[in-house]
Amino acid sequence: MNRRKEFTRNIVLLSVLSYLFLHISGLYLNPISAYEQAERSGHYGPSEMKHIEDYVSGKLILGTYDRWVSYTTIHRTGFFFWRPRGVNAFEYDRSKPLDYSRGIENQFYRLYGIVNDASIDQVEITLGDGTVLSQTDLYEDLFLFTWEEGGYPKSIRGYDAEGNLVYQEATGY
Amino acid sequence: MKIDKGLLGGSTVLMLLSLLRENDMYGYEIIRELEQRSDQTFQFKEGTLYPLLHKLENSGYVRSYTATGDTGKQRKYYKITEGGLKQLAEEKRMWQVFSASVNKVLGGEVHAFAR
Amino acid sequence: MPSPGKEEFLGKVLRQIRFPFDRAGIRAELADHITERIDHYIELGYDQEHAEQAAVSDMGDPTQIGIELNKEHSPLLGWLWKASGLLVSLVILLNVLYVVPMLTMSLFSGHDTGHIPESSIFYEVEVDEIVRLDDRVIHFSKVIYDRAGNLHIFYEHYNVLLRGGWGVFHYIGSIRDDLGNTYGGGAGSGTGGLPRKGYRVVTGFSPEARILFIKYDLYNRHYEVKVPLPVGDVRE
Image (cartoon, rainbow over all chains, first blue to last red; front, side, top):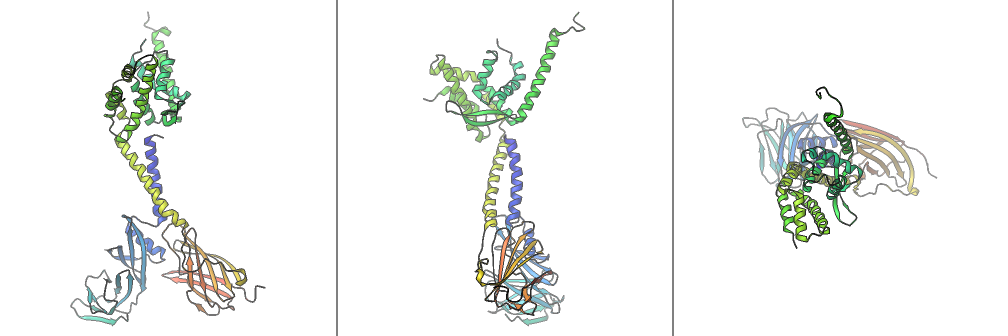
């Protein structure tokens, strides 16, 4: 075979093998595809993505699907590949002004949820050790807190744009 | 008698492919065969064979491989390909047309202005 | 003793060759030719030095030959070809590293995938039912009830698109019987490979149950598998 033919053959081989590799390995070149597969292989979704953020292992995506709220983690692997990790979801109570659930991944504690009462502009939680965490720019109607120390929050509160307390509850954690 | 290189250029590919159709050969062998068969008529600068052989390989008419000859020496041999055989047939046809035309001009037939 | 005439000739040719990886091959081919030509002149009675001069002279103008050869050894195609070869090796390596283990890998989480000695089997039922969740095809193959009251459920699953990364399928649904009993998750395990095998064992399953229900109802996905069970002492 001459060089030109070999080169062409290599390009074809490269395309086929690359596709095969990505397809069968469950690795993805773009994080959104990994996210979609994470949901599908977990038999969940498809969600409406409302927030995406980077963290040390990769990306985290917050979304809603029907009566559930979820956060899904995608890990970066091998420089440019993305691997689906976990889908965490809970069915939320629409009658409450806000609803939430918790998650944990290695050193990260997380609290995520949804605001049902549109007047709530700010969500605050108080951790076991007294630390107060606050989020004012909500991700559409979703919120997410991530922290490393202090244990799970004891209470959660929602405030309106003027700073008036709209809702609070003890989490029971 | 030495042949003018201009003429040689046109039919070298034809002769090369024809030789390789009979046998796989390496460069020096090809030169030797050309000299012997043409009774020393065709003698040209031997190094110029190689760009031609490499060009034929790039065109896909021949393919090279390393093999050990009778003496135990490893050399680069050339082998004609399917495409090469087709090209050979085409070159042969063109050569026959060409030489027939030359013959005609030289007086093989009577023409209008030969008066 | 090195032959300057020959070396000088080869040097001049190679100076014209832009693609470095082809130089060795070209050098060897031309060197072999010159050597054989030298031998020819020696046979004719020339001495080493004159044989070499004659042989090199017969070769022609090295720079011209080099220029013509260089036209047939395009560096662009050369580098592209080399890069493509490397990438193919890389992708083959990736496939071997990732894909092969995936197709043959086993994982264990406690239980062996169900070797139950004949003597402890109370009854065995061929289920042979296929259900589907998204792109996952699940084939419930059989259930075995043993004399200790354990119900063993065997199934296999694979991704219909043969897509990887779909992991173990752990939660197969709620397990109930026709008497109204609901059974806890039970221990499970699975293997990799294709198709993946899954296994679940539920303890304290009622010997009077006539139907086993495996019902999946999560995130708007559902299936239900009903397995009629033999009642009475079915084994001698």
